[in-house]
Image (cartoon, rainbow, N blue to C red; front, top):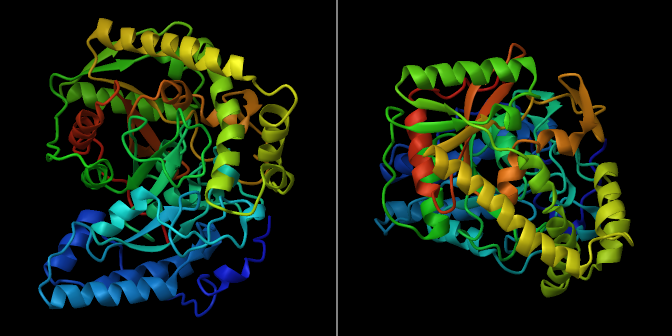
Amino acid sequence: MKLLPQPAAAIAYLALAGATHAQPAPMPTLLEAATAIREHTTTSCELVERSLRAADLHQDLHAFITIDRIGARRACAEADRAVAQGRKLGRLHGVPVAIKDNILVKGLPFTGGTRALQGYVATQDAPAVARLRAEGAIVIGKLNLHELAFGATGNNFAYGAVGNAYDPSRFAGGSSGGSGAAVGARIVPAALGTDTGGSVRIPAALNGVVGLRPTAGRYSGEGVLPVSTARDTIGPLARSVADLALLDEILSGSRGEVQPKPPPGLRLGVARAAFYDNADEATRRAFDAALDKLKGAGAQIVEIEIPQLREVAAKVAPVTDYEARVGIAAFLAKYKTGVSLDRLVADIASPDVAAGFRNRIVSASAPTREAYETALKVERPKLQALLRGAFESNRLDALLYPVTLAPALPIRGTEMSVTINGRTTSTLAAYIANTGPTSTAVLPGVTVPIALSDEGLPIGLAIDGLWNSDRALLAIAMGMETIFPALPAPKQ
């Protein structure tokens, strides 16, 4: 899989010229970086240069599609002047971050991870990006993704498969693979991804970092190439839950500090038949050990059943297929990309994405408006009622499950199918098996790392809650950080 030549508009930004292989200093977390700049123990330009060197060192990950060296250096110089002059500083003042390349960033190329959009440069920031910049964050570049955000591995045939931060021969997860790899490899302290069926939580889990899928609608979805407007949401990835809480506060406009909620007294649901039985041995061992640690710390583990969860969720599938066709066409026109839906589909490079569009989204058998309305207004409420009933009847504070059924698998040979625990299925179906049902119901969820497999690959724990429980979930996840400390950094 080769990296395609970049559009002329992007060449000035690419992380190819002047690369250095000098080992960069460790990248602090988001809050550590912001505090260090404010307290004059480092500078914005020191952190930006550290990010750029780390990106050069990890070019083999294909985490970035575009790097804005000129813009980032200009911005950090201004940030450092503001500190020296005693100006009022935002909460992310001078801190480098990176943005998934299906989110608009003014002045930077926007590809959606697909060839047809090469050469398109965004003329405005998505509101989520504008919020980060208003707090002083510096965008160093745009991150690679599963093409058009339609996949769970990050195996992109247009811009290169995204390698896992802990083993570049393994995939990073998707669709926000570049976001997971860039944070996991300590290139940036935090990144934005997007999540429809697991696309923030899967790469967060596979790269050993934390990620948040907020309740749908909590953040603005403007300026994002859609998959499903009913399910899509931007989501942050970082290395600590406190960083997620800060990013959630900024992106949502909420106020109020999140305090850790320790395990004693928590009622945490585990639905083994729905989320656990098909996991591989490494994942089952890690999940069982995590539950034992939580019980030992005082949490109540409540074994529950959610009958027919997957079957009910499957009936909501026409929502995504219908909204993808309508939403992508509307986005292409609204932002004057000069690209039609037909051309976009014709130029898809990744075989799994091409097959998905051909068979489900633009085919003659694609869902009708009537099927879409039924799925959205009849079937989705049934799914939501099923999950609400499970929470309320068992008095749950959160639902726990392994984020994925297996750690990251090798990039080569996983384009279309994988075998996990003796079962061969489509790669997408296998890796969104656990995150898919609750995201279809647009529940919020946090993922935290809990272990490394025997092969040194991260395994993540999902913590889901009912709608608008985002801050409560972050408090629970923050409390778990004392039980599951951060994983060791990947070997450089």
